[in-house]
Amino acid sequence: MRSKLLVSSILAVTSVLLAQDQRQIPPQAVERIVKEVRHEILMLPHYGVFDNINYSVFGYNVTLSGQVTNPTLKRDAENVVKGIEGVQKVNNQIEVLPSSSMDDELRLRLYRAIYGYPALEKYAMPVIKPIRIIVRNGGNVTLEGVVDNKTDRDLVGLRANGISGIFSVKNNLQVADGK
Image (cartoon, helix red, strand yellow):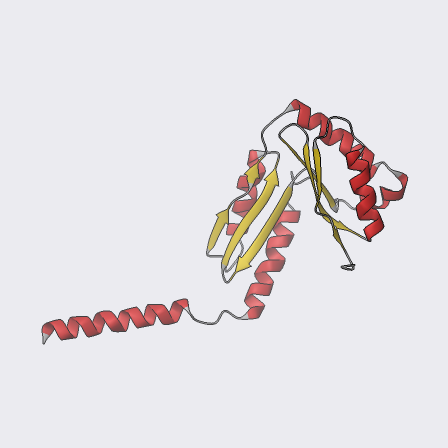
C-alpha cells in the first residue's frame, strides 16, 4: 500500500512538471523578449561593424551566435541578455575571432572599399552600420547584414572581392524587400 502511494505521488509530481514544461508561452512574451534582445545587443558600447551577433529565442531561452573581435563583447552580450526580464537561460555560442594584424588591416581596407564608395555611402550614415564585415583566418571574409536592393548586394560583393589579400568572400547580405 505504501509503495502504491509513493508511486502515485511520483507520477503526480512528474505529470505536474511535464505540464509546466509544455505550458503555452504567450506570443507577446516571446515578442517582447525578441525586441529587448535586439535592443540590448545594438546598444552594446563596443559593438561595431566588424562584429556580428545573432540571436534566437525559444520560449524564455535565448541562444546567441555570431562572431566578435573582442572577447569582452561576448561576455557583455550574454550579461545584458541575462538581465532581460523573463529570460531564463542564455546559451552563448558567440565565436571570438583570433587577434591578427593581417585581419585588422583587411578589415580597414574592406571598410574603406565598401563604406567609402560613393554608391554605398548611404550605408555609412546610421550609427549602427547595416553591413557587417567579418574577417577570419587571414583573408576569409563574410558579409552579413541588410542592404536596400540586389544591385547594392552585388556591388558590396564586388568591392570586397577587389581587395588584394582576400582569399574568399561569402556574401550573406540580405535584401530588405526580399527580392
